[in-house]
Image 1 (cartoon, rainbow, N blue to C red):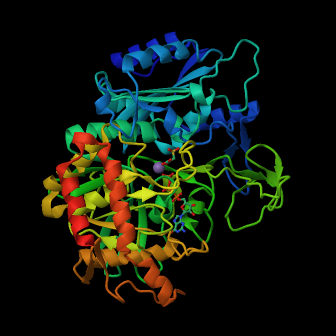
Image 2 (image 1 turned 180 degrees about the horizontal axis):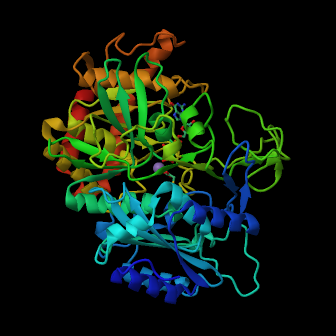
Image 3 (image 1 turned 90 degrees about the vertical axis):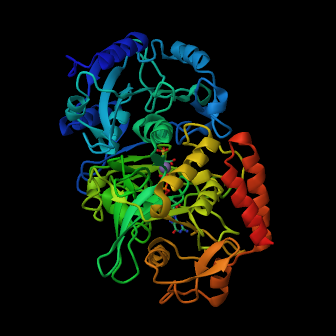
Length: 603
Ligand code: GTP
Ligand code: SPV
Ligand code: MN
């Protein structure tokens, strides 16, 4: 096919990659429905995709990945900056020259027997001032169809790029060349120790090798919109964050915009689509994973969602917990590593219905309640199984979610999964303490990353640990700097924890839709409608201000949910000091001030 662009840099790069990877053919993608249907047809033909029942799940497909390729792999993810100190203590660093040598060897001939797709995409509405253009080269048709949903793939991207425009080159391969006559695997990929997800921040370049799954392969998402973008944002005075964005509107029609950072699989998609239980208040979704934010002319911080779809955690998504996410994948969706039921629909754990029979993500026959030889329940869907859904299908999508100007953020929320210590809600005294809260957020590990080891808890600053494209100390300083720029227009900062448990393992807080009660308290605080109680860790609701009407929560449980255990917080603080000591002289002085002040308040 003739290349649909005259952009010299792009043509040269594509020619160079073609020469290195030696695919059978090169296909320039246009993001059309025709292209989507053709690729899905080919994947159904090859056995990689399963077409779901057209009546139950129109125009939808299921895929099962290789068991070695089910999530992000942090130990195989690198920041290859020229200087090691620029990657900092939270990233794997390798020398870019050495790594390029290693990878060039692997890339040489890696697309043999395959088609090389060139995917022009925009993160953010095409042509909008905050949007950025990427070109992903991939030999995975699964990646192409997912990019269709998650990013904006269109010939218009190349028009906007023009002959001279700049783009982020994103090179991806499944790392599994085919010899003539060799039958392809159902999910081709390379072994774990040969997988590489590499970022070259000085060149704004991404090289991914050997994985076909999620954030490892859909390079617009974590690689570009977080790791590379966070590094650009720091130099250019904006922010790229692992945050959902929502609009919360009160009965009088006043709008509040909330951006919340929770670690992977800790509730962003759920909160972004929340069904409010507070009468008269409603949530509209703007984004569920990534926020790009920039100060506007009025001095406030404006946010856009650079994505076009949701790559959401399937297990736990039920009518009762997240009906809007279910509705978003009612049709035109892709499912990866879920159960395909005998009647051609999908199923996963905690979907709220029973599965009478189907095929699990290992491609084995499966039904609810099945046990292995030792009596353990066998899961049908992988814990990190995902749906890829079009944002446009979300029934509560905010009508102006694509406004190129973005929405002005009133409230930042930080959080994580903590069975103990952290109360349901507290507010920072000021933005700088908010930065401390975000920087010392911690969470129990989830299935979203493969290899976090046996840790029961880890610090996950701003839910960005795996996604900060540079030194985390500089990143924290950037947060303080943004606070100075925004001054009294900076968002108010809150810290939540939906995940408190009783000693016998029951949730103390009902969560999901009921979280709207907590959001309402935040908005009342922003409006100055309610005072707060001062505690050593921050400001907390006065009795009755966070309404519990209609909830079955005992006074004891409520006291536990809101308890500030100074002893536990002292331990947390000393763990935080130890963790932050790794940042050396890059640890912002303001962070030390915050820790000293907290220590004094804890007494
Ligand atoms: P990534 O896409 O990986 O970045 O994750 P995410 O933050 O969007 O995660 P998601 O919203 O899909 O969270 C998934 C997990 O959080 C599931 O196990 C949910 O059941 C659980 N969860 C979300 N909200 C709540 C809540 O309010 N209470 C409780 N107990 N669990 C929740
Ligand atoms: C996450 O792990 O935070 C995700 C899923 O949102 S992935 O895109 O695979 O990184
Ligand atoms: Mn995420």
